[in-house]
Every structure is written in C-alpha cells, then in structure tokens.
Amino acid sequence: MMTMMPSLLSAALLLSLIPWTLTEAPPMIPIAIMVKNTLQNKPLQTYKTEVISGGILLGVMKRLNNSDAGFIFTYSDNDNYGPYLESVNGVAGNNEARTYWQLLANVTNSEFKPTEVGIGCIIPSPYQQIILNFTVW
Ligand code: B12
Ligand SMILES: *[C@@H]1O[C@H](CO)[C@@H](O)[C@H](O)[C@H]1NC(C)=O
Ligand SMILES: *[C@@H]1O[C@H](CO)[C@@H](O)[C@H](O)[C@H]1NC(C)=O
Ligand SMILES: *[C@@H]1O[C@H](CO)[C@@H](O)[C@H](O)[C@H]1NC(C)=O
Image 1 (cartoon, rainbow, N blue to C red):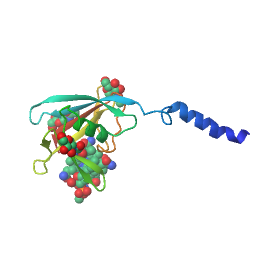
Image 2 (spheres, helix red, strand yellow; image 1 turned 45 degrees about the vertical axis):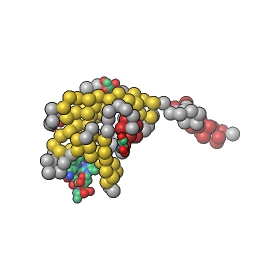
Image 3 (spheres, rainbow, N blue to C red; image 1 turned 90 degrees about the horizontal axis):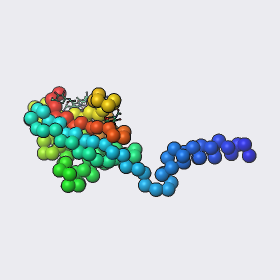
Image 4 (cartoon, rainbow, N blue to C red; image 1 turned 90 degrees about the vertical axis):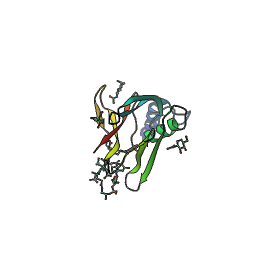
C-alpha cells in the first residue's frame, strides 16, 4: 500500500500545479512585442498580445503576422540554431551594412537584456516585454 503513495502524490501534485493539462486548453498569457528602429528614426511600435502558457515567441509572432495587427516578419531556418529573424515590418538585416534584428527581453520591471536564444526558443513569461531592436553589430 505505502509503495503506491509516491506516485499518487506526484500525480496529485502535477494535477494541482498544471490543472489544465488533462482537462482544458492551457491559459493565454499577456505579453508585449515592441519594434524599435532608432537607426532609421522610426517610431516605437508596441503590440500587446498573448502567448499560450509555455509557448514560444515564434508562435506569437506568427499569430500576430496573420492577424490584422500590422505586424509582419520573415525568418530563415538555420540548421544549428533554428529560426533566425530576418525582417520586421519590411525592414531586413543586411550583412554588408552589418545590421540585424536584436532580441531583448525585460529581466526586471525595467532592465532589458539580449536573449540567449532565438525566436524559436524564447518562452516569454507573463507580462514580459520583448524588444525587436534593429541595430548594428
Ligand atoms: C557572429 C554571431 C552573430 C552575428 C551573425 C552575423 C553574421 N552574419 O556573421 C549576429 C550579431 C547577427 C548574431 C545575432 C544573434 N545571435 Co549570434 N552568434 C554569432 C556567433 C558569435 C558566431 C556565429 C558564426 O559566425 N559562426 C561561424 C559560421 C561559419 O557558421 P554559420 O552557422 O554559418 O553562422 C551563422 C549562424 O551562427 C547565424 N546566427 C548567428 N547567431 C544566430 C542566432 C540564432 C538564434 C540563429 C537562428 C542564427 C544565428 O549567423 C551566422 C552567419 O550567417 C555565435 C557563437 C559562436 N561562437 O558560434 C553566436 C550565436 C550563434 N548567437 C546566438 C544568439 C542568441 C543570437 C541572437 C538571438 C542574440 C539576440 N538576443 O539578439 C541574435 C539573432 C537574432 C535574430 N535576428 O534572430 C547564440 C545562439 C544560441 C541558441 N541556441 O539560440 C550563439 C550560439 C551565441 C551564444 N552562445 O549565446 N549572432
Ligand atoms: C505573414 O503573413 C503573410 C500574409 O500577409 C504570409 O504570406 C506570410 O507567410 C506570413 N509570414 C509568417 C512568418 O507567418
Ligand atoms: C517585465 O516588465 C513587466 C511590466 O513592467 C512586468 O510585469 C514583468 O514582471 C517583467 N518581467 C520580468 C521577467 O521581470
Ligand atoms: C537598440 O539599438 C540601438 C541602435 O543601434 C542602440 O542604440 C540600443 O542600445 C539598442 N538597445 C536597446 C535596448 O535599445
């Protein structure tokens, strides 16, 4: 009898931690995507949207791209690191000009840091602000 307890306990614990896993759709989490391009003196654009719990930034961006929010982007597939963000709202990075879309996320209420992974691996946290920043390397 006692040997069943750990698995029962962990099953109960799992269910209480993520009660939606077996029952209903996972919750949507509010986040914001900001498009920043001071290099070309463009105004900051902010897109308030949602990510599925545990979901990746690329999915959010695809949904925004396919909505009428006025956000479009392109990406390429790198064999080693996955999706690489090529262009946002018609502006593309360029090897000769050494420009690219840098990815940043807030790690406290106001401090932003470049992410350590690309759009295919970033899992936004609730209310996180993601900056797509057109910059030079
Ligand atoms: C140089 C470099 C860059 C340059 C590439 C410019 C160029 N055209 O040469 C720039 C500055 C643009 C860059 C950007 C980014 N990078 Co970078 N980059 C590197 C670095 C130092 C060397 C890559 C290289 O030249 N390899 C040699 C060539 C022969 O191999 P290659 O496969 O052809 O290289 C290409 C890819 O590496 C690609 N690339 C570079 N970075 C990234 C990141 C992602 C997510 C993808 C899909 C592709 C990619 O650009 C290279 C040229 O085309 C590596 C670390 C390392 N030492 O390997 C990190 C590295 C690949 N980058 C990394 C990251 C996180 C980024 C950014 C997401 C950072 C950010 N927060 O903005 C961005 C990409 C954003 C986007 N638009 O999607 C990580 C990837 C980790 C991961 N598993 O996702 C690495 C491993 C560094 C690290 N440990 O943190 N990067
Ligand atoms: C963005 O939307 C356009 C249609 O407006 C579509 O052709 C394109 O494939 C979409 N891009 C992505 C990355 O989903
Ligand atoms: C990012 O900023 C928002 C708004 O200030 C905040 O609610 C959120 O907790 C922050 N994220 C992190 C990881 O600090
Ligand atoms: C964004 O890019 C601009 C232009 O290159 C640069 O000055 C700035 O430091 C970058 N980072 C942030 C968080 O704005």
